[in-house]
Length: 461
Image (cartoon, rainbow, N blue to C red):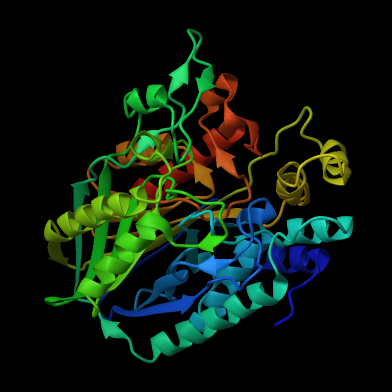
């Protein structure tokens, strides 16, 4: 399949994803069935990683996967998928959802694709790729042949999975506290609340590591699907940046992926899927100094939490199944964040690669917002009193905690890193406090209100 040019894509996506306040579909799931799938998304040697501003692929320590399932019997099929990539932004994200929807016989608004956000992994934005190619001296954002190959693999994997569906009679939820992994990165502030020092994914400063964990969600949540007593698929949700170390060109699913893979080996007949929650301001920095020895330690802690959450699962017969969507398209930031200013930065050959490639991502979002299409689709799969919430980009952990408060009588599991177009999504009050995350937030503070209103409509009722 050839990818459309931008004009063709905008016309197609406008027709495909019309702006709507809220769409909801509730079914009594007497004939619910599930079709797990997985396919390889490991980049080839020399492929750019994390948008082209770190070392490209020189080796593969462990492969990257896209793992998910198709749920049938509750209206049009529903698709959930987690991808071991840094991100899928704008047109690239819509194209993934469209490809999986075509294979599943459904529509893109009933597909949620969330990235796990490892950094020694691809970071795909097709608009940004076209911009940097025009410069002639910048590394690729993503190689299009490889990107297209992954879409083809996805179509084939979904089609193959649908030939081996399993009925679903029960759903279960459980949770467990994760010991010594997550910590808030925006941890040191002055008297006015402005951020003056942060913890990165790997933090060597003893002073910063000694500070408290700060605001996090300490629990890993699991939602599992059963055919009577047989567990078929288990989705695990936890909020932290999933990097122990990166930038060495060695592809890895990192500590969260290694934990998932260990659990998969222990339960080969159950498809285990890991989703990263709202982690824009959360890393493992308090507990990670970036040494290679720390990766298996963090993986072990994640694995222990997955096992504990699995043991806490409480099965219940499936009643109503509801799929809801809410469409938003927050405005971009103004001031120095203009198209002309960003174009000048991309063309400035004196700037480092990160200061040019990353700007292309922001320019891509500004053009999208100006075109007013395609919208960002928030979605929620609700089964009985369980709600799985899908949010975009690098949302701050406060949005995940806010979602739980919006539906206190429900078990809410949140996956972020869907459509990465907005990049970081701070809360409105954090914009004035600066810090790295705010400096690379592409949207105006209005995004807080739009996202919160969207979550409210998805979770209420």
